[in-house]
Image (cartoon, rainbow, N blue to C red):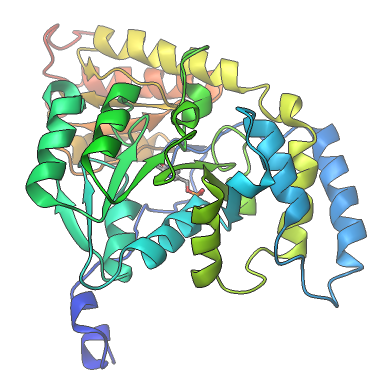
Length: 373
Ligand SMILES: *Cc1c(COP(=O)(O)O)cnc(C)c1O
């Protein structure tokens, strides 16, 4: 059988692994931070009507500039942004790839701070951009001083932040972003995939865009908007950055159907985001309940919780699978990550983890010790 190694593949891709979150058919999927609430039926109908109308035009190429979608996204983001400040693609992963294509590539580098979103390093590799792994402070934070020190020492062409960070949930201060921007001539990217799950009233990096043409804030409809399967991500920036994206994107990259679905969904923003408060409540419940089982939790502003004190993460992962529940093992020692699901899903997870923990050995060895049942 032929393997990749038998092919004349690029040397820098040899031996790499693809993105690999397992896609298993289980009843309760809490492994890839999806919004586990389906979109409301009435909104679904409205989206289908928009799709029905748009399919009659698919003999023609889509609007290459997706103007109406950019208008909708700008309206959603607010902060005085207009369509010229907005760019979109098939998921924010594609936006991030386009950023690396335009500002990274062979001979260039990107600085990031692991543990962070695994796609950041995979996209760096696929675009031939050298990956520089910075180090975080205590509790996964990044102080302005730490960011500036890494930027000064490594002179990257691109700095990637993730706020709040996946997989840790850690928020990032605007001071750190400001300091990083001032310390580099490169572009600074803030991946705000989970921004909608932050505490009410917390400012986002969107507030820093004015006067900072090298700052890019990337967002997605995959998480809060419950639109992961539709593949719509976007970014806000100076209009010149969007012009740079036009140099690397494939023509007509956003299909007529994708544009229609996203515009229709954004017309129902309030209903689409109605579950965000519920999800935040379930996340906060995880933050309270996991320590009672002896686990250590890390502050999270996202729709998931990273928890430590797991004696044998792989064994707990497998034991949860036997309960028809999947979580994420990111190979962070003694840690697992769980997405906040519906109330019923979160209850089922906590119940199953409690039973697994009570069996001893593989569960918690946290400060409260094991639960004796
Ligand atoms: C889930 C996630 C995304 C979303 O990617 P899409 O391609 O928009 O689905 C982006 N960034 C981070 C950090 C994520 O966790």
